[in-house]
Image 1 (cartoon, helix red, strand yellow):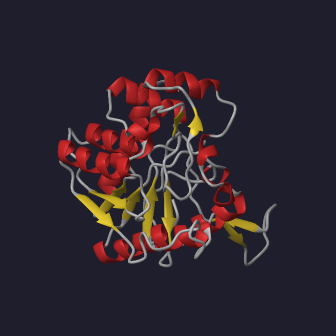
Image 2 (cartoon, helix red, strand yellow; image 1 turned 180 degrees about the vertical axis):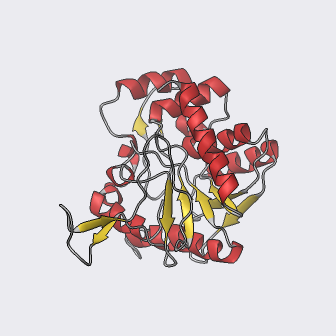
Image 3 (cartoon, helix red, strand yellow; image 1 turned 135 degrees about the vertical axis):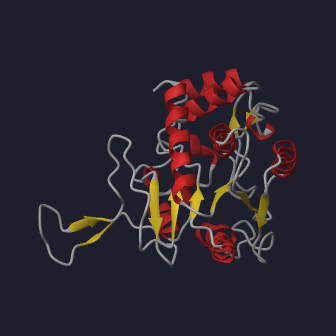
Length: 280
């Protein structure tokens, strides 16, 4: 898909969200994907970001993340909402007082859950892509969550009819026709980048000359391909110091994008549990 088609589809999704929901927010990690979503929102709404931009601070972020967050907020002028658990900076798997699953739940999912309740957000704009992880490949563009913030893809039918004992709980999305209203949903996750790939994001960043978190560029022969907390993210071997070099590297790479993330959290069964509880 050409870049213009990718962008047009994303802008269409974002404008649908604006038309349907009264109080959305957008999650921003300062990474390449969520910064791309912020830029797409500005394109969709004539330079403005009409929603709260939410940053979940675990207390274990790299200093470059905090610096980039504060600098871009000043430059682009959006309303930044920082949410932080009372346990932020106090627990992590390296210390040994929690597992990776518990750490993500307590420092990311639960603070977001509490913020959604406090602010009354009815939609959350998220920058995940289908090519990132197997559990994200089954997502929908408009994905409902229940009052307990649970995400379900299928459930067993009360009556076994048809060829399968399971019933789909996520809307079918064909020909860019999206169901965006769910009477029983507590809130809806909106995913404007599902149809993008990693290299698509970098090509967009190059085309729009977007600011980039410096952690993505090589220093001393290493760089971060995917950004997370210091406690669960490691750099990859790389000499890529420019966006063009990163694009070339990604095109030639034979390893997954999230290879630098702690692998016990990346296992499909663990990611399934995290996402069922509301994790991104």
